[in-house]
Image (tube, rainbow, N blue to C red; front, side):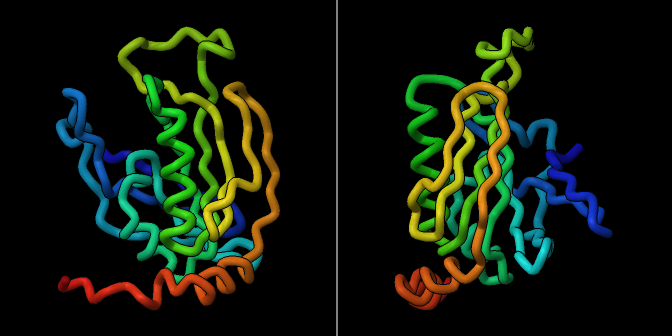
Length: 178
């Protein structure tokens, strides 16, 4: 079994298999889920989108690899677990990955079931809502609350290119051997 983000439409049908499997607080996703190995990008209206999911947000190298592969933005669907401090971690991590890679990060978390009144398995990850968009310099340009909603954001590839030139975030990395 794999944790997979499916991308379909506009002539595409492909999947991203989650690379970084969650393993903390007594839960090991790798007990039941096989990790992916490949970065995935897709081009939509001349914008190259990278794909990551959930726990992947804690690993900056993946976002930098996606940027190296041409991604100007990264789609990041999640089921971000709720507990003390998790909402703050979610925002910090989304913003940091945008800044680390010079990419837009489109952090999409499922709505908090407490807000919607939805009954869920108490052991299942449920999401906290709070979807957000961070620009390539790490600033939040759009954010949502904890409930279901629709967010439409304009993402400009040229902004990613300019931010990478200004910060040198990709060009100045030390060789991987260090």
